[in-house]
Each structure stands twice: as structure tokens, then as C-alpha cells.
Length: 196
Image (cartoon, helix red, strand yellow):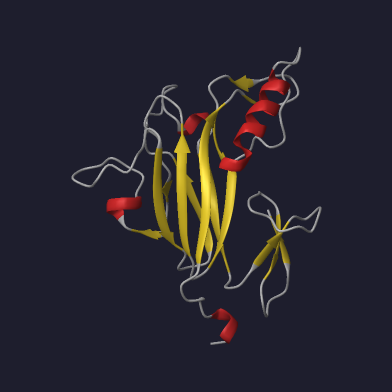
């Protein structure tokens, strides 16, 4: 095995994620979900809320480009620590599909005899990026498929596990990228590629 394919020991990546409620406008004609829910990086939450509401208040509500599913990344071999916040009046969570985690602390559900890992304010999840790939996540605090549920209103996203020691850059600016649907991926010993 090439040295660049070995996972880095004791590497931890941290994310602060917040769930926000905003109207999500789907198109230039003003079609929207008035009860939209979105995972965002905590540092971006206020800006996204403000700009999305500004666009929504136009004569014909308009989409805001940063209102999209959250996509975060990690490298194979890393531990991913997610601090999840929200101030909505309901239990919410982040439940990842396919990654390794301790079901008693990081499952993001309230099921059976396991500890309830949904939250009404703040919780910390720990995931392990053992295999490269795309892993979807969504809320398991309210799984109803009716209008009262959360997933149909936009509370979903993904974590992409890249090759060890990869870097991901903004395709337009070339700057380091913390989250985003589009990224230029640079991995040691492999050709660079654009991910979308």
C-alpha cells in the first residue's frame, strides 16, 4: 500500500452546525416552503437567515444562493466531531447513514433502550471516517412524512470522506473550503478533480 493511503493517526476535524428555520424559495416564480429547515455552519447562520429573508420579502420572493443542502468533508482516517445547535421549539438531531459512531452517543435518534441523542438545544456527535465515500445525514428528531416532519422541509445534507491528506478548495476563488456542494479536490499521489 502506498504511504499516502494510510490514514493519519489521531486526526480530528471539528464542525459547528446549526439548524435554522427560514422560508425556502425554490425558483424565480416565488414557489416556496414557508416552513423550510436548513443545516448550516454555525458561523454562517445569521447571514444566511438575513439574506434569505431579504430575498423572500421581495414583491416576488426570490431564492438565495446559499440556501442549499449542507455538504461537509473529512479525510479517511479522521475523527469528525460535530457540535450541533438549534433554537427551534422541537427536538432535532443529525443522523448520519453509513459512517461509524457510538450508537449511545452519536446516533441522532430516540429509539428503543438507547440513549436519546436528539436535542432541544445542543449536542456533540462523533463520527469516524473509515471509508471514502458520500454519507447522507438528516434529522431523526421528527421522522413523520407529513407537513409536521422535518426532512421534507429541507433538514438533510452529506459528509464526503476524501482520500487521506486531501485538501478541498473553492472552484472559483481557490481558497480553502469548509463546506459546499462544489469543490476542487487535491489528494497526494492522485489526479486533482472537481466534485459536485
